[in-house]
Image (spheres, rainbow, N blue to C red):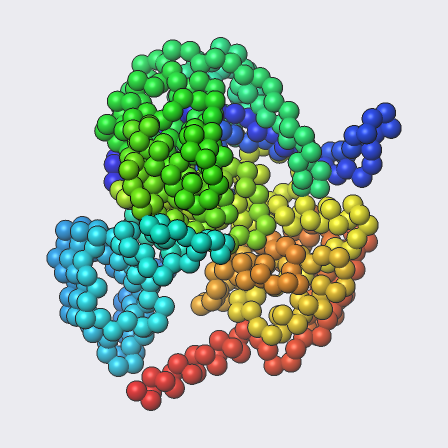
Amino acid sequence: MSRGPLVVVGDLLLDEDIEGEASRLAPDAPAPVVDVAGVRRRAGGAGLAAVLAARLSDRRTDPATGRRRDPKPARRTGRAGTLSGVEAAPDAGPLADVQVAPDAGPLADVQVAPGAGPLADVQVAPGAGPLADVQVAPGAGALAGVEVAPHVEVAPHVEAAPGAESVHDSEVPPGVATAPRVASLPDSEAAAGVEVVLVTALGSDEAGEIARRCLGDGIRVVAVPLDGTLPVKTRVLAGGRPLLRLDRGGGTPGRPGPEVLRVLESAGAILVADYGRGTADVLRDALTEAARRVPLVWDPHPRGGPPVAGARLATPNAKEAAAFSDRPGSSLRAHADRGADLAERWGVTHVAVTLGAAGALLTRAGSTAPLLVPAPPVAGGDPCGAGDCFAAAAAVALAAGALPEEAVERAVAEAAAFVGAGGASAVSGEATPSAPPSHGAEPPGDAFALARRVRARGGTVVATGGCFDLLHAGHVGLLERAARIGDCLIVCVNSDASLARLKGPGRPLTPLADRMRVLAALGSVDAVVAFDEDTPERLLEALRPDVWVKGGDYSPDGLPETRALRRWGGQTVVLPYLDGRSTTRIAHRAARAAAAGRRAR
């Protein structure tokens, strides 16, 4: 991986969300009156791209929330332990004749880097755990002579991805390859801890100072002089829905100083987040030179100039690509033709046309075989900032040595996760005290907006909570009955850390993101939100449901949630639980079945 910093170049903005409720019209005009609940401010434009790049470059951090992800299990040795995190470096010889002793734990997270020799003749002795989660990077040697247990994950060579699904049942025309859905690149390929530098036009006005604070301490800012004030974009939202946007401020970038040029010369990779306000234009010559040396990703804007020749990847969305190219049509083939046309016209290596919920289409000049990368399904969410997340993820991956195909796969997955977690509104910044606080891995987004909308129309907000580590019939029955009590059902889920404290070693069995996705797919559930504490009291204070549902034989009077709901007139109810169903019992039955199977062999 390049040792130089990842340099983000572009126009810093200040994004401001004024949040509240609108339940009446003004007496002097047919306009809604918004009762303001709080104001949130965050770095926007290239600032948002820099914040996301910094989080994405550290795989221990969730890009949407900025919180630490759960660390990987420590490496262990011994007959009952787990052999994990085995990495073969590039150009290494074959990893061969690996033997796993009887009764050993699973051989997991084996990663073979590009250029490594074959992983061959791996022998798993009777009674050993499964060979699982083996990841072979594109270009690695063959995986040969291995008896592979179910659920082994092998990353495909990027030029061939057979069997991938089409996007939203749309027909994929001949010549368009599809890539399977992936979560992310292996950790060994991430740019862990790389420095992120933001080069942007910045003055000393109040908006500029707020934007600097919103960037945080982890991003170094190198300023181009700004003649004017920092642009501010203000959204007015009622019940979580935008009503109005106000734009103010703006200026003209000046001549870049020697420090700016030195930073570009030292860059290990560059992301241009062009918002059409001139920063990229005044640095065009330096960026053209840099594109000859390091990976450069250009996220273009209709009001800005084209990407510089030699850029590794340009990332217009479908609407922008249609504005840049005169190729007509809205089909997948039309998107592919426009991408190839722009790659040739701009002189860039690849163009990834982002298609929103459909994923992205990677093209290059003269190619008739673009790569379609479908996006994983997302329940709800906010797409604001998804383009910045896509470009930032692609830049981080290229900085780590990924191929463009790999970079786009990771960018699609990260952008989908970002949207599902609430989009740009979930990114931390500055908030007034009246704004609802963030909780756990899921920031206040759909759940809080949903609760406000239901209350505004006089409906009943119902909430319930739990770990939901292995969703079973008891859970499903409880959720269905809870949903019938009111007008919406919000499920509060223990985070991984909270669940581990509650249930002890070996838990969770299912990571938080998977638990939330499964719950959100149920017809009885309207929104899902996570909390980090041992109990959901703090979350309920912000959510303020009318009814809190608990399953089992609890006494409502002894529950901490009951005390919380009484403060705003809510009610706790206990519903009977389906007898004989529990996650712990299912896990124990599975363990006994696995042990019996090993003895039978």
